[in-house]
Length: 160
Image 1 (cartoon, helix red, strand yellow):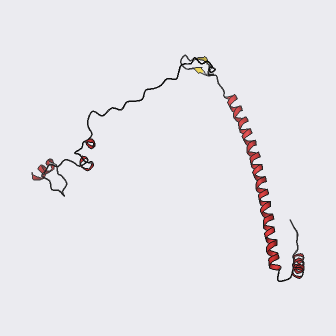
Image 2 (cartoon, rainbow, N blue to C red):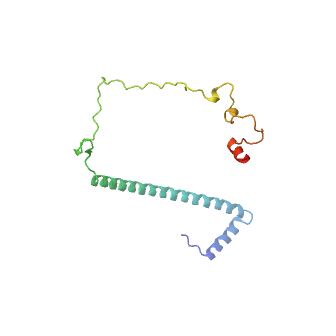
Image 3 (spheres, one colour):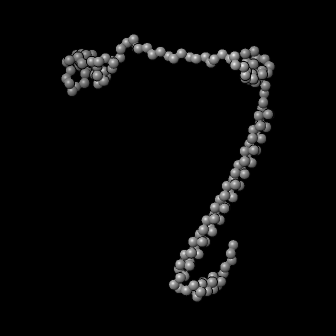
C-alpha cells in the first residue's frame, strides 16, 4: 500500500531524532503508535461492517432464490386431494370461513378427573410397615442372621 524504501525510512527517523530530540522521541513514538492502532481499529471495524452487509445481502438473495425454487417445486408436484372415504375425485380442502355471529355455542368443557383410592392397601401406606421392612423377605425363623436363606429342596438333595 505505502511503498517506503528502507533508505526513506532511515531519513524520516533521522529527521525525527533531530527535530523531536532523543528525550521526547519515545513519547512521540508511543503517541504515533496509539494513533496508528486507532486508525487500524477503525479500518477493521469498517471492513467487518462492510462484510456483514455483504453477507446479509447474499443471505437475502439466497432466501429469495430458495423461496422461488420451493414455490416452483410445490407448483410442479401439487396434486388435487382425493376423498379417501369414497376414493373419488378432488375434494375441497379449504376451511370454511369463520362465522362472525355471536350465536356460537360456548366451547365444550371437559370434567376434571376424579381421584379414587386404590382398593388394595399398599404396604408403605400401612402405619406399622417401614420402607426397609416392605422390601425385606419374610423370615422363617430357622436361618441365621448373617447367612442367606436356603430352600428346603436344596437341603433335601444335599442330605440324600
